Length: 156
Image: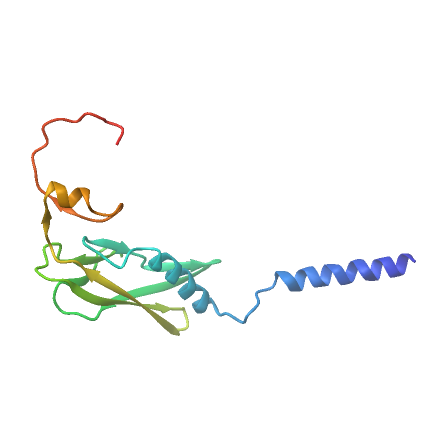
């Protein structure tokens, strides 16, 4: 009876170890791509201002370098600072909408790469009137012009 119980416990331990192993055969690059897709697709397609993007992805203890590019030559560019910070520099005062594809290339230590792309748009610049501003959706990026004459509620 003790041997049977020990065998059952050993089998359960083996099964729990196997269940904890990575399933699906994903490589670290696939995991890095999946993580980056999750981070980047959470944002809006509209990009009315400059924004920073990840220059690396860490999965477990492995670091994957990320390089960025855009498919347009005017209105949007990728800027890499001396410290490695990557900024997508957009023309905030674009006369017309600028649609672009932002592409990330993820590279591992062996030189293998995987790419993923995101459709983005710089909306045309327009100053809104007070009525237009009040009619916009929550969390919309807008530009208004006016004179502040007082602040009534300091909590918002």
